[in-house]
Length: 234
Image 1 (cartoon, rainbow, N blue to C red):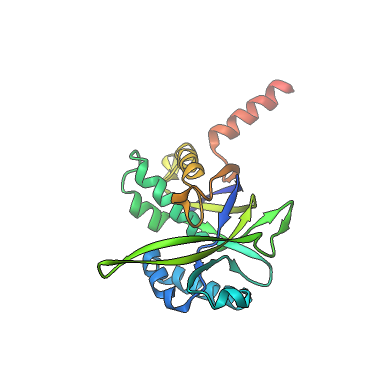
Image 2 (cartoon, rainbow, N blue to C red; image 1 turned 30 degrees about the horizontal axis):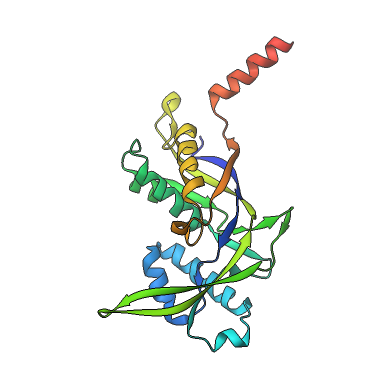
């Protein structure tokens, strides 16, 4: 008896995707609090952040400037996004898609994204370094006044990644089905395509095209259609 339904997806970014990990140690705790991660997710994210800070090199001229630096997660294989970033995008889509009841519980208990490290690729090869670093002036309200500073953000142009979305099965016998079916998942992914994945989505970054490559176990109705096609050909 299958406990999970697995959907394999490919995400192709349409333009830039941006790094969202803080380079500054002072901003790390604020970053994790904003993400609302589970203890397990936080432990993995902290490990990824430590590795990324060690592997990233910032030019000396930039280090002396008063700024905030956002980088990509990075290890000895290359740059990657975290699985929780896909779950965050799905959570946002679920909050919009009113047809899903008790969506918070379903997402928390019945949806998993694997692997945890989603390596960015171009033309089949893992991206080793960011394509560049963009700069922008940011204004932050603080203690009744506005503080201005420079924000530097790593970016990669039109990479892709693949991952598996696991959805818990519920019910018994013939009534057994995933808590989120393929049609509903497709609707959610359509929303994610526009809202984006990764950092600075509110500014239009991270928009993408998402393809469902396969599902396992396959939908029975689709299996029956395939069998009927085979019978007609024979």
